[in-house]
Every structure is written in C-alpha cells, then in structure tokens.
Image 1 (cartoon, rainbow, N blue to C red):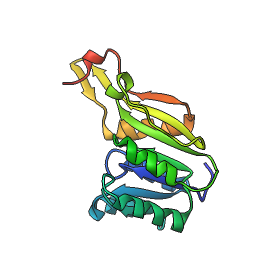
Image 2 (cartoon, rainbow, N blue to C red):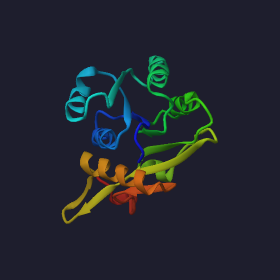
Image 3 (cartoon, rainbow, N blue to C red):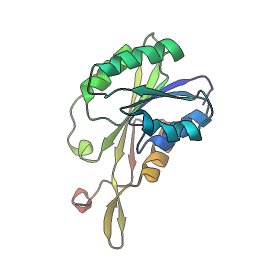
Amino acid sequence: MKSNNHALIIGGTGMLAEVCLHLAREGYSVSVIGRTLSKFKRLQVESSPNSIFPLIADYNTDDVYDEIKKAILERGSFDLIISWTSNYSVLERICEMNPGDTPFSLFHVKGSRRYFEDEPIRIPSKCNYRRVYLGFVMEESGSRWLTHAEIANGVIKQIGADEEMGIIGQIHPYEARPK
C-alpha cells in the first residue's frame, strides 16, 4: 500500500480496531468514526503520532456528515472506506461525499444473514465495492462466533486480496451458526 493515503473506518474502535492500527502502520491517515473519545485512546496510544484521527459522531445522526467534511478538508478524499454498519443510506451518502473522480475502494463488512438476504446499496461508479461477510467457526463442541482478532485479520486479508466478495469463517451450513 502506498503512503499518504486516507482511510475511513466506520466501526473502528471495536472489532475493526486492529484494522485501523494495521492501516496506520502501512502509512495511511486513518479517520475513525465513533461516539466517544475514550474508545480512541488505545488506537492513538498504539499508533504513530498523527495517523489515527477520531471523528466523534454517531453515524446515525447528521453530525457524522460534518465530521466527514472536516476529515476530507484536512486529509483529502478517501482512498479506502471500511464499514461495519447496517445503515446503508448513511454509507451511500458518505460514499457520495467523497470528492473527485479518483476511484476508491469500499470494504463493506456484513453479518452472515446479509449473505442470504440483503438489500440493494447505491454506490458511485468510482467506488470499487467489496463485500466481506462474517460467519462463524465450527469446533468439536459446536459453533462459535468469530473473535475480534479473527475478524480484523480476515478484513486485512480481504483488503490485500481486493476481491469482490470474501467470507471470514464459514456461513454454511447456516443452521449450524451459534444461537
């Protein structure tokens, strides 16, 4: 990955925290949407200075759009967006806000149910849309959900592979998923 790129992570203070740190190590300026500043402390402590930038807003409110505008003004358009949100209309608007004609990639992280039943999403033509589905893990004693580390490592691999669709864990048989 080339340096001086700008990434936006939606859901980056939880299960995607390691993805934020990875991108920061790769030279990205990483803008992270979150509701509370305290959750950003770990990211900022574990990353190099001026690599992780908190955007304090609930992505379900209009405040997020003001934060997105500021991030773009300060660090430029997004080369990469990674999203863990089920709010497709917010994600569509954020993608539309990304200025210019330069292509960018969106890795849309989704739960396994979305693999079987999903709604359409409108993405600008300049966006390379990638879907990453989160499944589960089968073990001798039954099934379990993926850990944050497994999710983050899987998303990082999907970014490197740059394929249209990826699955972390397994989604078949769906009825074997944890209850």
